[in-house]
Amino acid sequence: MAIDTLGTASGGGLWRRAVQGRVLPVATLLLGIFVLWYVAAIGLNAPQTRDRLNRSGEPWTVGDLVAGTWSMERPVLPTPSQIGAELWKTVVATPIASKRSLVYHAYVTASAAILGFLLGSVLGILLAVGVVHLRSLERSLMPWVIASQTVPILAIAPMIIVVLGSLGFVGLMPKSIISMYLCFFPVTIGMVKGLRSPDPLQLDLMLTYSASRAQVFWKLRWPASIPFLFASLKVAVAISLVGAIVGELPTGATAGLGARLLSGSYFGQTVQIWSALVMAALLGAGMVYGVGVVERLVLRRMGMGR
Amino acid sequence: MAGKPILKVVPGQARAAEMPAVEIRGVALAFATADAPVMALSNIDLRIDKGEFLSIIGPSGCGKTTLLRLIADLEQQTEGDIAVNGVTPREARLARAYGYVFQAPALYPWRNALANVTLPLEIMGVARRDRLQRAAKYLEMVGLTGFERKYPWQLSGGMQQRVSIARALAFEPQLLLMDEPFGALDEITRDSLNEHLIRLWEQTGKTVVFVTHSISEAVFLSTRIVVMSPRPGHIVEVIDNDLAGKRSLDIRDTPEFLAVAHRVREALRSAHTYGD
Image (cartoon, rainbow over all chains, first blue to last red; front, top):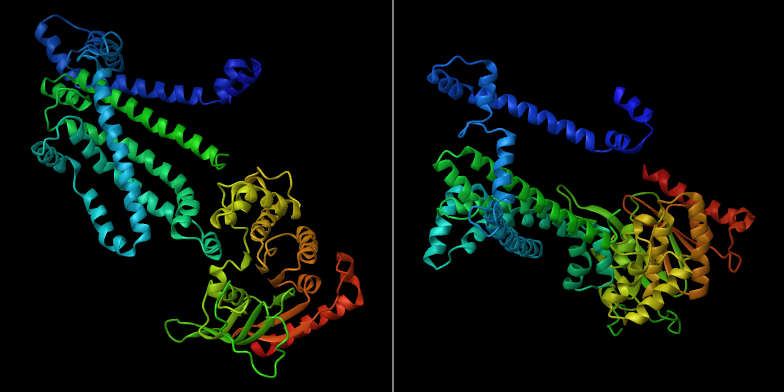
């Protein structure tokens, strides 16, 4: 390939690293997405822009049309640069404590999501421990665990909020509960598998030592399940954010990414919606990455990180 | 440990003789299947004295591993009696009377070599200092000093199996049950581990019950060889093997060694011809 020869010709350094590493493929993909995005923005925003240009009565060129589709106030599809500008305005140019700051809204949602994630993980682990140790629990509990996830969260979220609200729980807690409701499921499923992952010989070994059930749990089942735990935690932390955002929709909350999405759609502020979406995506990616970092540290400490 | 003896001493038998390490009488094991029960073992009688190195040899499916698991109380017979140190296998297991070495090392991957060896000691509540001392001692005995901090994935197959032997020795049981421990290893590693094992047995005077499907391994290691045959699993012949005091790998070319190996092979063959 031409790039390869170029890379070797320049004799290593930055360029070579870029070619051989991940920088170039990632950059190429990103560029491709941006190009497609701008093209799509022209297509989707063209009808409105054309109407506007026609109404003005003056002759217009294709160049005018393209420029118009990329700079509408309420476009069907805003361009990356518009979203970037909005993000800059609401993240960097606004004080963090202000209610106009996207960082503030992200913080509100993230705190609900993380609390829900922690609660859901603990609940998920406890359920899995119960299911693995008591056969009757497996029969009686697992169908409910699975049924709970077949109900759309959008349908059940308002009811959770109404019920908790009547009990005096408002603000952070109801959102966290919805988050927890989504989170515990992957943790339970992963941990049941993880706690059952020791092979028969490893279990027989414990039998030959006449180890107690608690010893079998702490010295074998629990450490064996850790890789499974982290795999489920990554899924759980991502959907915890979905739970928190969904929890903000029915309350008409004034703060949080969900509130931004809602008010954006009331007033047709598509740029605001998109910038909230980008923020949510970045937040979710950051949370998954955070779990990944903890996973690497823990597995290395356990001697299982290679 | 105190437990009631389950075998009555039969008058006329040598009362003065020491209690056997393992005594098996009329043991049979039938697995229930959909159509008819399958006999895995039938009519097993065997007495294993203290300090013996007894090998059980036979083709796959002859029930040799199952017999070992019965002694260890990892499975239960459907007929007959087994006594380990004069008590039932279950009582012996609860008293931690034996160490068991499996076909695979079955090390815990999140524990390094040292921590794998201290595992049984932790479960038995041995103090930390003692644990470390004993683990170091038995790792040295299997030639793994310097590898204490290595995790299983950093060790070769032979080293892993040596860790598992050190682990079985660590709580100093008088009876060692070994189920084809070297079956998955190459012949060179197997030879060196066999030499290790025989030195260990000479040093410690433990009773070893060793399941294998290698004739030369059985003849090299053991004082007695039990030949088994399948369908149903039963004992064909018990061969005494007195190569006392001169067990080094060189004896495998001596006429005495070859004669015993020949007898074992003949016993295996005779059992096999009427089997199918």
